[in-house]
Length: 206
Length: 206
Image (cartoon, rainbow over all chains, first blue to last red; front, side):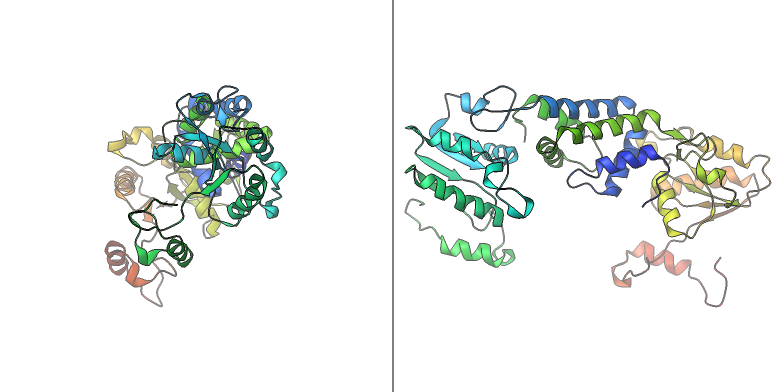
């Protein structure tokens, strides 16, 4: 699809298809949708994007997106300040919050170490993490909740080296067969890991 | 996912997830992507959307999207003016142009008759189609290229009634098994229609 009927359409399709998960066909579908609907829809969309990009702040403590200088989680007196969950981005914080299983604090890295994409440790929010751990008496455990891929493993390895000197307990979320997942459809690596890190009944999980 | 870390994020997610084919999870992914990238990306995106919506014109003859008052196809002296292909929207024009198999003119309806969605014939670009056919000596055939669903069939039926009085040949694109499609995976209706409208070898297609 190279010949768009108008330069305006072509520009809009080009910009929209730069977004993750949107190809040229979806972008054209979006453009035609916007053309059919009232122009306020397009204006509201454009304004919300620009405003979001210009005005969004990051929590000065944990690096999560926030409306204020310090985010609600970091400010809350009800959170357990002895455990810090390290995640890649805000999406992970939302996902973990939705489980209702975690009541500690967070630290948002803003990415994972990925030499191929030019992402080194200095690009990530790791310096602030070390500052939080330095001279700290509250934090007893760091829980790594990173993606189970090469970037996640590299980042976890790097962090484990950096954190070792602070003498804080380091843990990772469990890898295994998803709840409701059929054993026969699980990939071999996940199944293998779930056997290696098996949990015994009548005993506390490690 | 109800608790977004910031009102700005929530607004942007809400606006973006109104677009067709984008849910709340994809919208959040897009928002986080825009936050990671330079702010010029967000500005360019927003500008291209507003500009597109405000300035896009429709060809006064065929109703297709156009940069000028009259579109390139309608203006072209190389197009066959004896045949008019009726389609739902601009996407269909692009798809047909990409085949390289059609050299006639178009008429873009801007939708299909769909009583459930409140789309009646008066909402569509049908009045202009009738004006094009009135007192016309060039157009010999109307080719309907509408979607093979209830809305498409209803619209085709309505148009066939309207066009009948003009004494112009009416045709439809062929329905059948897609090229490269496996017979066993075709649905019964398509397979049934492909048998009913079978074509004989050594004979011109109807």
